[in-house]
Image (tube, one colour):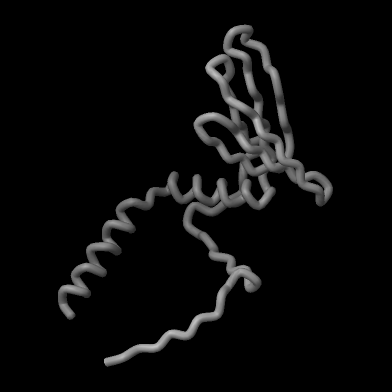
Length: 125
């Protein structure tokens, strides 16, 4: 029993030391953007000509991988997905416009009832 308590305390200490104010704010901004509450601008720039090739401005969620950027934009209740291929001749900038009003301390967990699978938990001694 004491080993379990020691492990739980160690895990809690590691979790708390990993949390920084900037990290929590970053998570909260990302969550707000994924919920279409943050105005952003995404610009793709040709690195050979130094000229913009593509620009999106609006409330959007941005998912960046090694070879592409997926932008899901919300406008008047409709959603648009833009997939941008990244090559060696372009770069991107994602800019939050107007900032975000998020807490550095508070977070919330939202459960979507439709996605919860009912389970039965039983125990034995």
